[in-house]
Image (tube, rainbow, N blue to C red):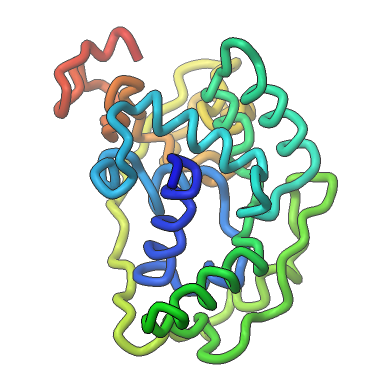
Length: 236
């Protein structure tokens, strides 16, 4: 089993355990590497020694390699070319932080069949029954509201029995955008000058946090050093 397959299998296990609606619903790329499968929390299970190994494997996964994920055409073409280059730049995945991906149904079904053959019964999907119609990415990273039938309503899918529900997220402390021209670190969209913001108005990502490129730990703006590996924040 190589790094890509190991990451995919662990992603499926993590989604089944803590993010069950994403078995059949799309999710954002930024949420994948920040919340669902961040390196700092999953490095042991992924078997990846460094954050760079993690980012290169994530780059390959998000390129749509082996059909594990359904991705849009622009992201697939860009990341496939980047992964095949002599010096891959995994930072490119942040350019697609607001794009949406989904677990492809065929590989997921193969894992379920493999589990049944080995005597392990897979958990049901978030709907409690058969998988919903698969998400199909268009040529654009934007997804219509039809792909999120439960977004904005009180009737979110109920996780399967025994599946823990994700707890509340950290309350973000607003930052003040000092001047015009500052852009979001995730989607590169322009931020309104002079406003207090916690989240990007374009992609919804948390602007109060930055990530250490050495170990992937979340750092608050204004910190001088990484609290995990000690790297100077001036290098971020």
